Image 1: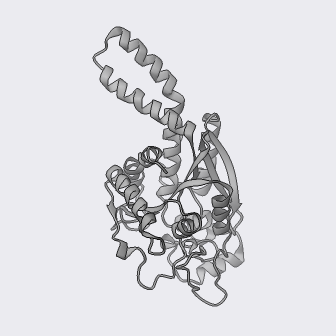
Image 2: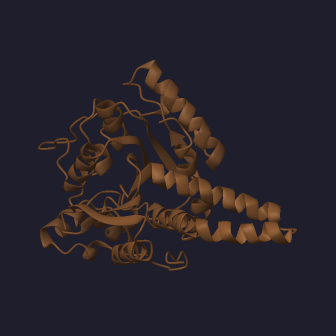
Image 3: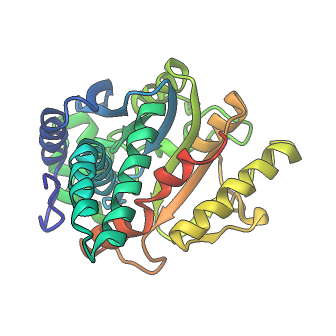
Length: 321
C-alpha cells in the first residue's frame, strides 16, 4: 500500500508525493488536478476518483491543526481505487472457488460483492477529493512558523501569539471556515471581507466547475455530524437529516442538535453553509477524532478515523442524491 499511517510526521510534500504515486499506480481511475495555490505559493491538490458523470466532493484540512483527515482521505482514495482495480481478479478467484466448492466461499462472496459495488459506484460517480485545502496552516501546525517562506506572512502569523500546534488559520492568519459568503457571515474586523482568501476562492471555483451532488467537509474534533441549516427550509433539512442518520449508522458518530448548529457569537461563513445556500444540495460537516484529543493530534487517530469513515463514500453512493 502507498499511504503509510506509521510515518511520525506527514508533511505537505509527503502528501503531494503520495498523491502523484497514487495517480501513477491507479491511472485508470484517479486523476490529479491543481485547483489553486495558497498565499505562500503551495498547490492545492484535488484527486478525481472515478469515471462517472455525477460528482461528490470530499474536503479536508480546512483548519491547519486538524492534521489527521488529509492523510486519511488519501488512504480512502487508495482503498476504493484498489477495490475497483482488483474486482476482476477477485471475480476470477471466486469462479475457481465455485468449481472447487471451497469452505471459504461465503467470505469470498462478500468480498467480491463489495468489490462489484465499488466498481459500479466509481463508474457512476467521480469523487472529487481535496485532502488539504489549507497547506500553509497545515505546515505551520506541524513545523512551526518557519514553514512559511514569505517573511511578511510569517511575521503576521507570529504576531497573533498563537502556539503553532494550535494553528487553525491559513498563511495570512485568516480562518478559511469563516470566510465563505453565506447568510451567517459577519466581518471580524476592519478590512475583512468574505472570500478574501485564495483557498476560499479555490474551493468556491471548484463548487462552480462541477455539478456536485453532495459535499462533505471533514474536520476534527468531536466524532459528530453537523447537518442542520437554520437558513434553509424544512424540506432541505429533512433530506439532510435522512442522510445524516445513514452516516451516523456507518460511523457511529453522534448527530449535532440543530440548536448547536452555530455557536453563540460565531461569525459564520463556513464551507457547508455556502454550498447549501448557493446550490441547494446536501452538505454536511463530519467531525472526526475524539472530542478530548489534544493538539498536535496523535497519529493513532489515522487508522481509527479511517475505519470509522471509510464507508461514508460507499453509503453516499447508495443514496438518491
